[in-house]
Length: 186
Figure 1 (cartoon, rainbow, N blue to C red):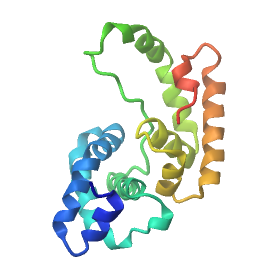
Figure 2 (figure 1 turned 90 degrees about the vertical axis):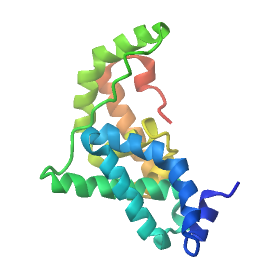
Figure 3 (figure 1 turned 60 degrees about the vertical axis):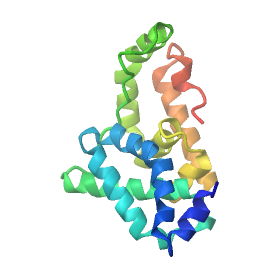
Figure 4 (figure 1 turned 90 degrees about the horizontal axis):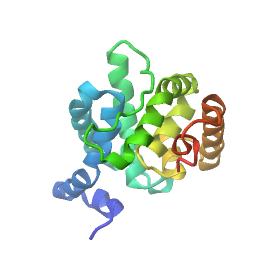
């Protein structure tokens, strides 16, 4: 199976080599958009793929893996969308869990629901870069190094900003917050 980097390189001369990238990463990118702009997620995903295909020659392996590059493209598409909506950014919200969750998750969901308003408020108060790093790692399951590439900062800087964001969340939520919300999100 070809790596993402190999497929992206081949797509310069063989457009069909780009298709497996779409298949591999569409779900994650759609989730990224759905959590940030739910009503526009499908359109934003399509725009992200158009821009990624058009800009595939700009990928630089030295700056990180293809996955991080794709999330960077997605971040730029989302920023353009928000500018077009005449709002510079949207307050971060937590994704709700589906109502069909199994019973063993009920207690965890109730604990999370109790702190959700405080969590939303605290996330909204974080500096934009810290919030985006935290959400890329917690929601999109990117590594801190991949998230750093998406944001465009050195990995060490991303780790220190991530630490500050987690510290602020822990301080705001206090000791009674569910461990999964204030624990290690990486």
